[in-house]
Amino acid sequence: MLISLFRRRARAAKAAAPGAGPSRARRGGVVAAMLMVVAGALFAGSTLATADPDRSGDGGTLYYAAGVDPQFGVCRGTDPLCYHAWYDFDPAKNGYHVLVFTKTAGPRHADLGPALGPGLDPTLTAANVVQNAMIRLGQENGFSVDWTEDTSVFSSPATLLKYNAILFFTSRTVLDDPGQTSLRTYIEAGGAFIGVHNAFGTNYNWNWYLGLLGNAQLMDHGPEQTATVNLTTHNDSSDKALPSSWTGEDEWYNLTTEPTDVKVLATVNEKTMATDPPVGYYGEPGMGADHPVAWCQYYDGGRAWLTTLGHDAGDWEANSTFPGAQEFQTLLVNGIKSAMGETPFCK
Image (cartoon, rainbow, N blue to C red):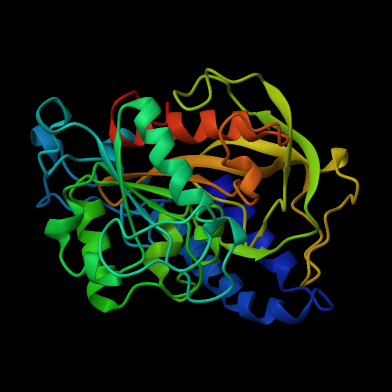
């Protein structure tokens, strides 16, 4: 744990180095924050603060028994003690349901198609590739899918609690204050969050959401290109059906920091890229040998499964021959299943 915190601080310090690009100034505050986190952890004799004995989780397990991350003020990491089922998600009675949220308040990926109308399940066109793909993947894998770009759906936690998982493929600030409160309440009740691709370019000024992503957001990226994706353990529910490596094509997001206190599921080998290192549009020189592209964690009572993959429409099409498309879809579907609790999560 201390190693990961020091790596986080070092990563932030590197990012703030002179000449690193115009957007590095935004990351300067990360250095100070990380210094405070590390100093606090060392002073306390532990990287995690003392549990709150008054908050109890499912089955009498002490909520936060695994400790509180002082940066985000929540229990997070790979310890299942950070999870609790305060809400009665009962798939045996109600089935599995996923909400796909694709609102964009900034650049919109072409595979999202035209902006959607209000309400749940508005009319789609063939150009709404991601939404159509999620409907198909749900039908093929035993879960139903609703889709929306209407923030009023997030006005009440009761609406969100109808879903076993909520998937974001979004950009910039997409939730108002009631929406943020509802999403957090949903996660605290044992809900699941699936963050795909530009979910990492969303809600930059919301610290809780940064933690939900694993303490990593989009910094920049280089050109779309092929590279080799490698599984790190090959023993997780979301990756066991996959080969140990494959060729994929993506933008390969460079992140503000490496994700911390998570289980990294897959990385991309920058040495296999045509542009090595994959220097991004802000000058980020890649992320080195352990460039993560998929990971999972428990967070604030819920589960979070995350991937930076999924940029191209070819990733989402049925029977696609686009490089890495079938592996991406398998990884995503099995990640969703594990986050919903259908299969073991983040083990």
